[in-house]
Image 1 (cartoon, rainbow over the protein chains, first blue to last red):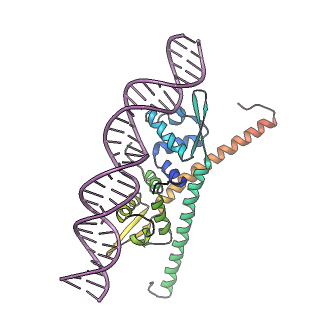
Image 2 (image 1 turned 135 degrees about the vertical axis):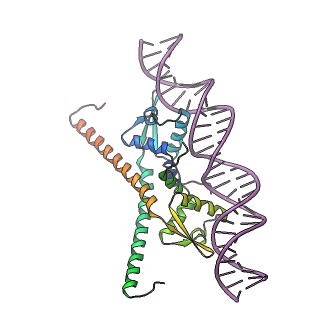
Image 3 (image 1 turned 120 degrees about the vertical axis):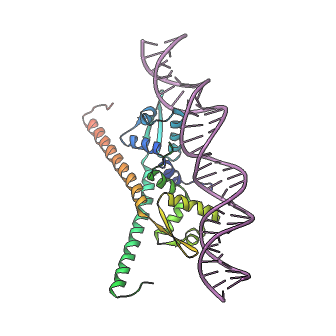
Length: 114
Length: 114
DNA sequence: GCTACTGTTCACCTCCAGGTGAACAGTCAC
DNA sequence: GTGACTGTTCACCTGGAGGTGAACAGTAGC
Protein backbone atom coordinates (compact mmCIF):
# COMPACT_ATOMS: atom_id res chain seq x y z
CA UNK A 1 0.00 0.00 0.00
CA UNK A 2 2.08 2.84 -1.31
CA UNK A 3 -0.47 5.20 -2.84
CA UNK A 4 -1.24 7.67 -0.10
CA UNK A 5 -4.46 9.58 -0.59
CA UNK A 6 -5.07 13.24 0.18
CA UNK A 7 -6.84 12.24 3.36
CA UNK A 8 -3.83 10.20 4.50
CA UNK A 9 -1.55 13.16 4.04
CA UNK A 10 -3.96 15.61 5.68
CA UNK A 11 -4.23 13.54 8.84
CA UNK A 12 -0.49 12.90 8.78
CA UNK A 13 0.11 16.64 8.47
CA UNK A 14 -1.92 17.21 11.65
CA UNK A 15 -0.21 14.44 13.62
CA UNK A 16 2.78 16.53 14.71
CA UNK A 17 2.64 19.36 17.29
CA UNK A 18 4.99 21.61 15.30
CA UNK A 19 2.84 21.32 12.20
CA UNK A 20 -0.38 21.90 14.14
CA UNK A 21 1.24 24.97 15.72
CA UNK A 22 2.04 26.30 12.26
CA UNK A 23 -1.53 25.70 11.13
CA UNK A 24 -2.80 27.43 14.29
CA UNK A 25 -0.78 30.54 13.42
CA UNK A 26 -1.90 30.57 9.82
CA UNK A 27 -5.51 30.48 10.99
CA UNK A 28 -4.96 34.08 12.11
CA UNK A 29 -3.76 35.02 8.63
CA UNK A 30 -0.83 34.62 6.23
CA UNK A 31 2.67 34.63 7.69
CA UNK A 32 6.27 34.26 6.58
CA UNK A 33 8.19 31.07 7.37
CA UNK A 34 10.00 32.84 10.21
CA UNK A 35 6.79 34.23 11.72
CA UNK A 36 4.93 30.94 11.44
CA UNK A 37 7.70 28.96 13.12
CA UNK A 38 9.24 31.34 15.66
CA UNK A 39 9.32 30.08 19.23
CA UNK A 40 8.63 26.48 18.26
CA UNK A 41 12.08 25.38 19.43
CA UNK A 42 13.02 23.70 16.20
CA UNK A 43 15.85 24.30 13.72
CA UNK A 44 15.38 25.91 10.31
CA UNK A 45 15.95 22.70 8.33
CA UNK A 46 13.31 20.98 10.46
CA UNK A 47 10.84 23.78 9.71
CA UNK A 48 11.56 23.44 5.99
CA UNK A 49 10.73 19.72 6.19
CA UNK A 50 7.52 20.26 8.14
CA UNK A 51 6.45 22.85 5.57
CA UNK A 52 7.14 20.45 2.71
CA UNK A 53 4.88 17.92 4.36
CA UNK A 54 2.14 20.51 4.92
CA UNK A 55 2.43 21.60 1.29
CA UNK A 56 2.38 18.04 -0.02
CA UNK A 57 -0.87 17.58 1.90
CA UNK A 58 -2.19 20.77 0.30
CA UNK A 59 -2.87 22.22 3.74
CA UNK A 60 -0.55 25.18 3.19
CA UNK A 61 0.43 27.04 0.06
CA UNK A 62 3.35 29.35 -0.44
CA UNK A 63 4.12 32.44 -2.50
CA UNK A 64 7.66 33.72 -2.72
CA UNK A 65 7.85 37.47 -2.17
CA UNK A 66 11.39 38.71 -2.46
CA UNK A 67 13.51 36.93 0.07
CA UNK A 68 10.58 35.95 2.27
CA UNK A 69 8.09 33.16 1.63
CA UNK A 70 4.48 33.87 2.55
CA UNK A 71 2.44 30.91 3.82
CA UNK A 72 -1.34 30.69 3.59
CA UNK A 73 -3.81 28.14 4.85
CA UNK A 74 -5.66 26.17 2.18
CA UNK A 75 -9.10 25.26 3.57
CA UNK A 76 -10.04 22.29 1.38
CA UNK A 77 -7.91 19.51 2.95
CA UNK A 78 -8.96 20.44 6.48
CA UNK A 79 -12.56 20.55 5.32
CA UNK A 80 -12.27 17.01 3.94
CA UNK A 81 -10.57 15.67 7.06
CA UNK A 82 -13.25 17.29 9.18
CA UNK A 83 -15.98 15.85 6.98
CA UNK A 84 -14.57 12.33 7.34
CA UNK A 85 -14.49 12.65 11.12
CA UNK A 86 -17.96 14.17 11.37
CA UNK A 87 -19.50 11.55 9.09
CA UNK A 88 -18.12 8.60 11.02
CA UNK A 89 -18.74 10.12 14.41
CA UNK A 90 -22.37 10.73 13.51
CA UNK A 91 -22.75 7.19 12.13
CA UNK A 92 -21.28 5.84 15.36
CA UNK A 93 -23.61 7.98 17.46
CA UNK A 94 -26.62 6.80 15.49
CA UNK A 95 -25.59 3.17 15.92
CA UNK A 96 -24.90 3.63 19.59
CA UNK A 97 -28.25 5.29 20.25
CA UNK A 98 -30.09 2.57 18.38
CA UNK A 99 -28.37 -0.09 20.51
CA UNK A 100 -29.25 1.84 23.66
CA UNK A 101 -32.87 2.04 22.57
CA UNK A 102 -32.94 -1.65 21.72
CA UNK A 103 -31.48 -2.58 25.08
CA UNK A 104 -33.93 -0.47 27.04
CA UNK A 105 -36.86 -1.87 25.04
CA UNK A 106 -35.63 -5.39 25.71
CA UNK A 107 -35.38 -4.56 29.38
CA UNK A 108 -38.97 -3.27 29.46
CA UNK A 109 -40.14 -6.53 27.93
CA UNK A 110 -37.99 -8.47 30.43
CA UNK A 111 -36.12 -10.10 27.59
CA UNK A 112 -32.52 -11.14 27.54
CA UNK A 113 -30.93 -9.52 24.49
CA UNK A 114 -29.23 -11.78 21.92
CA UNK B 1 10.33 16.39 20.68
CA UNK B 2 9.50 12.91 21.84
CA UNK B 3 6.41 13.41 23.99
CA UNK B 4 3.52 12.75 21.66
CA UNK B 5 0.17 13.97 22.87
CA UNK B 6 -3.17 12.21 22.51
CA UNK B 7 -4.05 14.48 19.60
CA UNK B 8 -0.82 13.56 17.81
CA UNK B 9 -1.62 9.89 18.11
CA UNK B 10 -5.25 10.32 17.12
CA UNK B 11 -4.38 12.11 13.88
CA UNK B 12 -1.57 9.63 13.24
CA UNK B 13 -4.03 6.77 13.76
CA UNK B 14 -6.27 8.23 11.04
CA UNK B 15 -3.43 8.83 8.58
CA UNK B 16 -3.36 5.29 7.17
CA UNK B 17 -6.05 3.79 4.89
CA UNK B 18 -5.99 0.40 6.62
CA UNK B 19 -6.57 1.99 10.02
CA UNK B 20 -9.32 4.25 8.71
CA UNK B 21 -10.96 1.19 7.12
CA UNK B 22 -10.88 -0.56 10.50
CA UNK B 23 -12.45 2.49 12.17
CA UNK B 24 -15.11 2.60 9.43
CA UNK B 25 -16.08 -0.98 10.17
CA UNK B 26 -16.19 -0.44 13.90
CA UNK B 27 -18.56 2.48 13.37
CA UNK B 28 -21.16 -0.16 12.47
CA UNK B 29 -20.56 -1.93 15.77
CA UNK B 30 -18.03 -4.14 17.60
CA UNK B 31 -16.11 -6.70 15.55
CA UNK B 32 -13.42 -9.31 15.99
CA UNK B 33 -9.93 -8.71 14.62
CA UNK B 34 -10.65 -10.98 11.67
CA UNK B 35 -13.96 -9.28 10.86
CA UNK B 36 -12.54 -5.79 11.18
CA UNK B 37 -9.59 -6.52 8.91
CA UNK B 38 -10.91 -8.99 6.33
CA UNK B 39 -10.49 -7.98 2.72
CA UNK B 40 -7.99 -5.24 3.50
CA UNK B 41 -5.21 -7.09 1.69
CA UNK B 42 -2.79 -6.99 4.55
CA UNK B 43 -1.09 -9.75 6.54
CA UNK B 44 -2.02 -10.69 10.11
CA UNK B 45 1.13 -9.25 11.69
CA UNK B 46 0.45 -5.97 9.90
CA UNK B 47 -3.09 -5.91 11.29
CA UNK B 48 -1.74 -6.54 14.79
CA UNK B 49 0.56 -3.53 14.43
CA UNK B 50 -2.17 -1.24 13.12
CA UNK B 51 -4.37 -2.29 16.03
CA UNK B 52 -1.61 -1.52 18.53
CA UNK B 53 -1.35 1.95 17.07
CA UNK B 54 -5.13 2.45 17.22
CA UNK B 55 -5.17 1.24 20.82
CA UNK B 56 -2.23 3.43 21.83
CA UNK B 57 -4.22 6.39 20.46
CA UNK B 58 -7.20 5.24 22.52
CA UNK B 59 -9.33 5.12 19.37
CA UNK B 60 -10.07 1.41 19.76
CA UNK B 61 -10.37 -0.78 22.80
CA UNK B 62 -10.23 -4.53 23.00
CA UNK B 63 -11.80 -7.24 25.14
CA UNK B 64 -10.56 -10.80 24.85
CA UNK B 65 -13.44 -13.29 24.57
CA UNK B 66 -12.18 -16.82 24.33
CA UNK B 67 -9.93 -17.12 21.34
CA UNK B 68 -11.34 -14.05 19.62
CA UNK B 69 -10.60 -10.43 20.44
CA UNK B 70 -13.54 -8.02 20.23
CA UNK B 71 -12.73 -4.48 19.10
CA UNK B 72 -14.85 -1.46 19.96
CA UNK B 73 -14.65 2.17 18.92
CA UNK B 74 -13.81 4.62 21.70
CA UNK B 75 -15.46 7.95 20.84
CA UNK B 76 -13.40 10.39 22.92
CA UNK B 77 -10.21 10.65 20.78
CA UNK B 78 -12.18 11.14 17.57
CA UNK B 79 -14.29 13.74 19.35
CA UNK B 80 -11.16 15.66 20.35
CA UNK B 81 -9.62 15.44 16.88
CA UNK B 82 -12.88 16.65 15.39
CA UNK B 83 -13.09 19.49 17.92
CA UNK B 84 -9.57 20.68 17.05
CA UNK B 85 -10.42 20.72 13.34
CA UNK B 86 -13.77 22.43 13.81
CA UNK B 87 -12.32 25.10 16.09
CA UNK B 88 -9.54 26.06 13.72
CA UNK B 89 -11.67 25.85 10.63
CA UNK B 90 -14.24 28.18 12.18
CA UNK B 91 -11.52 30.61 13.30
CA UNK B 92 -10.14 30.59 9.78
CA UNK B 93 -13.57 31.18 8.29
CA UNK B 94 -14.18 34.09 10.65
CA UNK B 95 -10.84 35.63 9.75
CA UNK B 96 -11.41 35.10 6.05
CA UNK B 97 -14.84 36.68 6.16
CA UNK B 98 -13.57 39.68 8.07
CA UNK B 99 -10.85 40.19 5.47
CA UNK B 100 -13.43 39.90 2.69
CA UNK B 101 -15.63 42.47 4.42
CA UNK B 102 -12.68 44.79 4.94
CA UNK B 103 -11.67 44.54 1.30
CA UNK B 104 -15.15 45.22 0.01
CA UNK B 105 -15.50 48.19 2.38
CA UNK B 106 -12.15 49.52 1.19
CA UNK B 107 -13.30 49.10 -2.36
CA UNK B 108 -16.48 51.04 -1.67
CA UNK B 109 -14.40 53.87 -0.26
CA UNK B 110 -12.04 53.67 -3.27
CA UNK B 111 -9.13 52.97 -1.02
CA UNK B 112 -6.15 50.83 -1.88
CA UNK B 113 -5.70 48.21 0.83
CA UNK B 114 -2.12 47.70 1.97
C1' DG C 1 29.84 46.01 -3.51
C1' DC C 2 29.64 44.45 1.05
C1' DT C 3 26.82 42.89 4.71
C1' DA C 4 22.87 41.14 6.92
C1' DC C 5 18.91 38.53 6.56
C1' DT C 6 15.55 34.63 4.98
C1' DG C 7 15.05 30.26 3.87
C1' DT C 8 16.70 25.95 1.39
C1' DT C 9 19.86 22.31 0.49
C1' DC C 10 23.30 19.00 1.84
C1' DA C 11 25.24 15.32 4.54
C1' DC C 12 24.46 12.87 8.19
C1' DC C 13 22.18 10.55 12.07
C1' DT C 14 18.35 7.87 14.78
C1' DC C 15 13.94 5.96 15.33
C1' DC C 16 9.81 3.86 14.12
C1' DA C 17 5.97 2.89 10.77
C1' DG C 18 4.88 -0.63 7.65
C1' DG C 19 5.53 -4.85 5.60
C1' DT C 20 6.63 -10.01 5.30
C1' DG C 21 6.89 -15.43 6.50
C1' DA C 22 7.41 -18.61 10.13
C1' DA C 23 6.58 -20.03 14.57
C1' DC C 24 3.99 -19.86 18.62
C1' DA C 25 -0.05 -19.67 22.35
C1' DG C 26 -4.56 -20.22 23.44
C1' DT C 27 -9.27 -21.85 22.59
C1' DC C 28 -12.94 -24.42 20.50
C1' DA C 29 -15.02 -28.65 18.51
C1' DC C 30 -15.09 -33.20 17.40
C1' DG D 1 -6.28 -35.38 22.59
C1' DT D 2 -5.98 -34.09 18.02
C1' DG D 3 -6.81 -30.76 14.67
C1' DA D 4 -8.58 -26.41 13.18
C1' DC D 5 -8.92 -21.75 14.11
C1' DT D 6 -7.72 -16.80 15.99
C1' DG D 7 -4.48 -13.76 16.84
C1' DT D 8 0.26 -12.47 18.65
C1' DT D 9 5.19 -12.67 18.70
C1' DC D 10 9.62 -13.11 16.51
C1' DA D 11 13.20 -11.97 13.25
C1' DC D 12 13.99 -9.49 9.59
C1' DC D 13 13.91 -5.77 5.99
C1' DT D 14 12.86 -1.04 3.78
C1' DG D 15 11.49 3.65 3.62
C1' DG D 16 10.75 7.86 5.37
C1' DA D 17 9.80 11.09 9.45
C1' DG D 18 12.32 13.98 12.40
C1' DG D 19 16.33 16.01 13.92
C1' DT D 20 21.01 18.49 13.60
C1' DG D 21 25.11 21.84 11.92
C1' DA D 22 27.28 23.73 8.00
C1' DA D 23 27.08 25.60 3.64
C1' DC D 24 24.63 27.78 0.12
C1' DA D 25 21.35 31.05 -2.85
C1' DG D 26 18.82 34.95 -3.22
C1' DT D 27 17.27 39.49 -1.73
C1' DA D 28 17.35 43.89 0.78
C1' DG D 29 19.73 47.80 2.63
C1' DC D 30 23.42 50.73 3.30
